[in-house]
Length: 99
Image 1 (cartoon, rainbow, N blue to C red):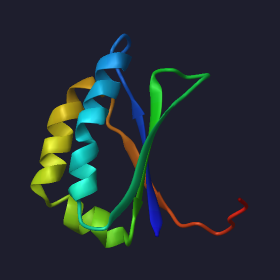
Image 2 (cartoon, helix red, strand yellow; image 1 turned 90 degrees about the horizontal axis):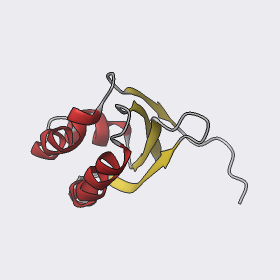
Image 3 (cartoon, rainbow, N blue to C red; image 1 turned 45 degrees about the vertical axis):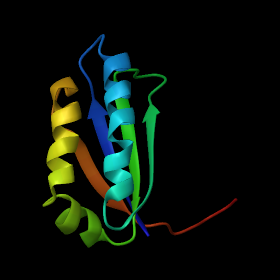
Image 4 (tube, rainbow, N blue to C red; image 1 turned 60 degrees about the vertical axis):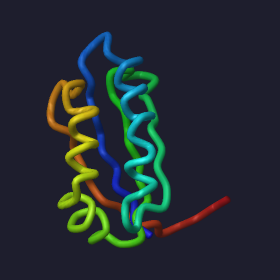
């Protein structure tokens, strides 16, 4: 499994609406080929900054399958208006698991 970590900065005073939009998007990710998990985390020191962490079976499930799907367009339509700047997206693979 790999993890997509998207750092998303939202416009001030849009937190509740952004979080509601991400909640609406959960079924999109559940239906996506290779999507194994999803969570949204909000920064404590930087409350306008979120990390969207999505577990994918393979990198291609995200970069090829999901990004070329109608689900990706639906996702962006739900949340894109809240972005203060384009998200920074990187992929990670686990190397040490504690507990």
